[in-house]
Length: 483
Image (cartoon, rainbow, N blue to C red; front, side, top):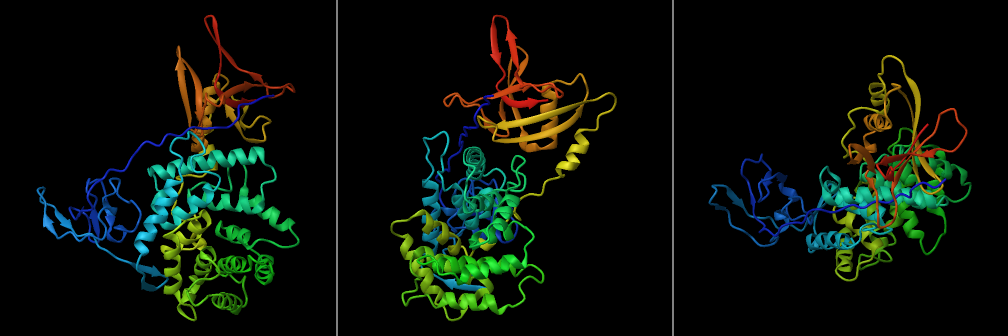
């Protein structure tokens, strides 16, 4: 039975305005300044940090040019924009010339990867890495209402649905990258349209009796998975493996993974193991500050942020200067992905969903509230299908009034899970679903939603629901099943 393929079109609807870099103290609280358009106040330390925190981009205009304090016509005090090359690394402040411009350059480079003329696949196959790098530069990229964050989140959903439906052999490392990205964009990797991706990664890890990439362990640990002493053994084994020429990279990832495991109660018995790992990493630094190359230098620096290990037996400032110098030339995605977090004093250990707004109620609570039905009821099974062969699906089982319509069922599911938001086109008073869960009909690709109906006790295939309008017959544009 053919079901519509998943696809989607998302429009990016805003542009930053060119405004001079002067912020207002106005009525903002102490330690903050107001954007020029007066829509919001931001902390002073977000001014000239390489990220547009004001919607009019006034916090990043004219950085490095002193603006004397003055009274404007509105009576508000104009503040001079601070110029700072200071970088907070752990508990230490380092003055690193070029840090601010390097931050801006890398963030701009990531943004320029976006294909403005494309309706889908705007950010490319490395979208998961783009999301993590931008988040580790500034959490506000994925705060509510941020257009870049909304677009990345939408495309990540489409991309992952497509990968899961078409590629059953996605590698464990690729799956871990998607889980990392889902955490930073505030998607739940334990419930992705009914799939528990964290559980799947754990299952694959346990099935691998030989070498385990420590990045998988780091992602499992960051996602809140229950970790074991076997995971500690996997990490230390990976650190001691001889997988050249990637040995130093693997050692750095192993150190990050073990640092996360060390936060779990009574899991890592000997603290000296991690200290010895980090000390070994320091020995790879050359006199010019680098460790093999830019990517490895940045990854090792991320590891040495653990317990401020960079302070001793490692030239941190020289390493940072080598990173900044390297990103002033040609930039590759891997270099940018590992370097950008370092320039903000962050690492892959900082990946989490702690910045996300807590959901007001659990799905179980929403289910109980939505299904509070009195009187006679019937059993209804509602499914959402993705892919030609229904490789991916999500199913709800409900109790509904006998006189409820299919659209009542759809709306009830939305009350249970607000990710299932539905949009309609109404023709002659009859609704047709054109978007579900943010995935829209796409006429250029010929992909649409369809409704299929089947008696719950019947063994036959579901029947396509049709609506008649005079002499015209139109198929409902939704991809759902009622049973």
